[in-house]
Image (cartoon, rainbow, N blue to C red; front, side, top):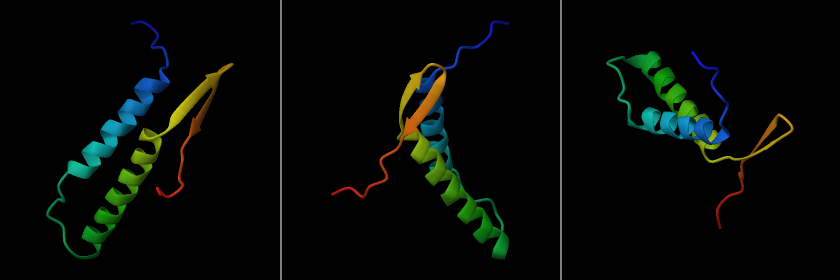
Length: 74
């Protein structure tokens, strides 16, 4: 097996895909506080995956820098 090469573009695409997957998954048949915990976790997962999915990157001398503009849109 060959040694996989790191690709920032591919990593960002994986995070975009994960955000879409979280957004489209259903809620399992759970009730009460567990349901609320599941919904909260899904919202946080979507936010985290979306933030990385929206990042631009710079890779210099082996250091990966992700930039994310969190300013509100005008």
